[in-house]
Image 1 (cartoon, one colour):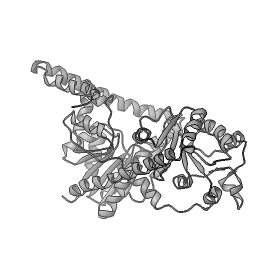
Image 2: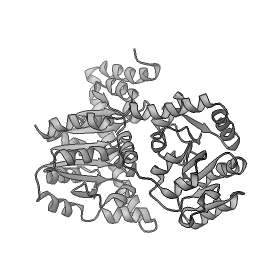
Image 3: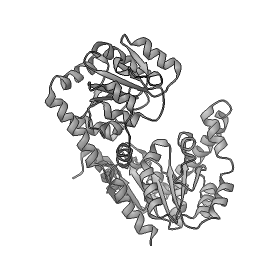
Image 4: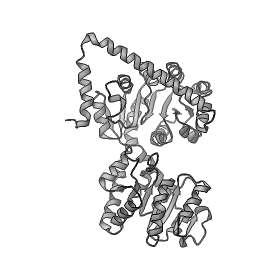
Length: 445
């Protein structure tokens, strides 16, 4: 029996199946109109990006990156006729696709990897990624672009990561019988696929050969549309665990800790340090702190230092006496994932703003995790860990203090939270292996 939130989806499906044949032309007309709206929306977005490029740095990078794509693809295609195409929206999706990319590259070194991005944050950061043979922006999803793209590349397999659903690209792949799969996929009942007017978008889902879903909710939603999927989990667990296992000691952090209890606060924004700094000032006698800001601008680091009434030092200035300080401020990029190993507690930033940053890096080390309560609910791992008792959302300083004390003053609560986060990661490893078993059958067919 489906839970109540799926009933509306099933109801729409049942009602559509009861439509009289004489009314079907109206639905066909509606579907055509939706396609027109979709195409106009793509054209409008293309215009907006070109206009914004006049004054916006990100839009300028995006527009510049779209020049010469097809010429580059033609040169690439001349070198091979065995391409595996992986498409990611942005940097976060790339990290989910990365374990699969690298597994394909290792198992099938004769195959060429084509990696595409929609967002500059993905392309600009990974345009020199050495495990891909060619990296481009994805041209806008028009019929002309999609047909030309697939004609040139003609992949043996296409893999779209998480939320990437493009009508014309998926349609062209379907018409050529080129296998298309979605990995680390998450669907929700409130998405357009499950609205009565979402026929065009349900058709996009039907273009996929298989879905590897992150959660059971996605599997049930797909089943309501007679679409099969496999519960594989999130490939980020594999990627983060790989990073952790290959990590090395950070000598300055080890000396700073000096065998004392420590909280690592990672990916912090101002809204986070506005909560953390008073907490640090009140708890520095029993706890040390490492703060890794999301942005390492001089102004922001100075504002953190000015908000602290305890001794702090920047990583770049840390010397032999680093253990004498209460706060270590990380003024570089790239070491955060390894810093969590030194903490008994973790705080992950972003949830007071645009969205919670990666909590899996902290979870891999089996520590309780705190974060803001305003923008975390769209992250499956955050909800799972809260429900299990390994993570704690907080609305400000007072709640951070009270929830920290419940763990610190009651060792059984602390140990339970540690076990929850560690076991949660272990339970979710293996998504990349499940996906690779499927991909292997296709590539070797």
